[in-house]
Image (spheres, rainbow, N blue to C red):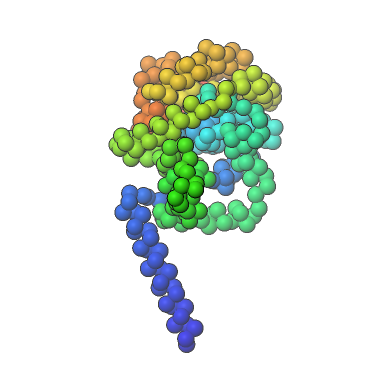
Length: 345
């Protein structure tokens, strides 16, 4: 009887504490969203194995992830694209995986963010290691890890306290993240990098969209802009030759399989765009890549309906503009016969 009573008390205390903790963080403006983790990427990657030539796979960094919206693409084409872009990442490792480890010969759209695409081929460099870790997890992940992720999805979708993204945002709510933000005296000075707050909502099928707060709260958007400028100032010189050479080997393999490769340069604006023009001029990087790849290629600045889109934090589109960008991109691709077997608008 005492054991039963103790169990009931323990459960009651746990429920009260959980509700209080959840209520507290919601009062601070947090809301539930999926964590953008390796297991979610791997779940989408597994679908490549059953694709046909009519399917579309999206690769790239966060701009391709934010700006090409899965639901809008489906509305415009009748097909759900497989979103395999990865934040803060070069697309080269994932394209290499698709080309060399699958029989896929449909359409691959590679979003080109110059600072990341041309960054490096060094395996331990962050822009390379991050996407490669996702590829490795797909092949090496255990059944226990996959089951744990699937069981966690309903909790992530309904509980703010499950926020613990692999990005390690400054406002993650897991214990490790909260402790990381505690500084004792002057023994461990704060990092030079400005605090990097989460500004994305993630959903299934794998899709990322900008949180509304980023659009409406200028101070919040400016905190993210500070991070982009910090990264831009500290970025090592691009390795154009090595990255282009690595990419072109896979481009030729993909073409030989009958694959349809499309390059897309998503929008950027403000200080970020100015920095790109100075450090990664279009003619030297994008135009050079297009000339050697010899595939369908689309730069946002070449289209009147896209060139004036403004990114709230200078690097990604709001959800409203991302849906518009996706819709117009599909229209452009269809008019150029870059997409096959897609339903009309």
